[in-house]
Length: 343
Image (tube, rainbow, N blue to C red; front, side, top):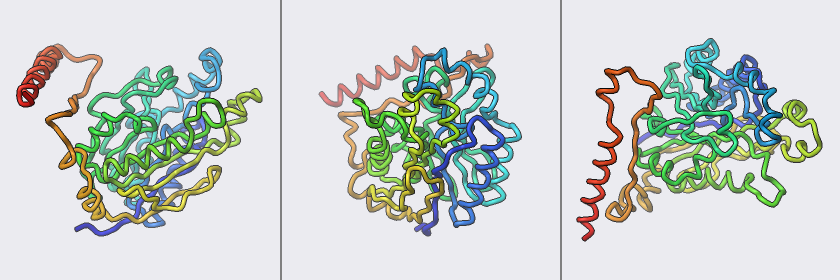
């Protein structure tokens, strides 16, 4: 049996396009969450240095003015900013899951960096598939990014934004006995009031559904859009009507889908705190465990490639690497075996 403990989800705007100032703000929020007794705190998607909203507002050519500053203010592993976040986690004895734009050599990736309470890096996962126009800015992750980690608090996993609309990705997470899930969202400020609406109802519902389907606790962090961000990016009335101030809909859900923390107003910044009891998961699992007793592997199975997918390998590494043709051949053999079982 485990004892109940407190968790936290952030709802706030970053110091947009200012990595140093955003890290300073992040440290203060980490300190605040720890002071309120939280043992883990989750931050929104690409909170460092902010979500690149211009990609939704105009033609790509008009957004080129932001490319260089966004690249320069994206965070690098091992940088002073990275070390500052690790130190904040260690100093405050709290696990931190930070949403970042990760700069690696010449590319950017939508990341979630997980620091344990001693300041060690548990993972630097990357969003498996950036959504829609995000692909004009960010590269992709691979199967090694779909991972749940064993920690002193329980088994913790993380996904970004509309990764929560990918059934196979979610199933891969559930299959790893995820107990605490860090959901990172940018802000629900677009697709509202138009002919095609995919705003707060859809996204809050997706986070809640992850909790119910996976029988886990979901810390759903959500950024807000500040007045300063609108002033910077919205030079026409049409853009101001499209990118709305606020958009914060942070939540914390239990494995039964219940809301565990009182939500903030969508323009309000703050931290949601809730006490969770992992023993509640056993009750939820008794009713439905989609990767356990509630599954039908004779009918449906997920093929999951967990390995890293490097762009370049040394020749000797290549000799030891798994041949993709071999993977396909083995998969076909497994499929044939299942087919025979069904017959």
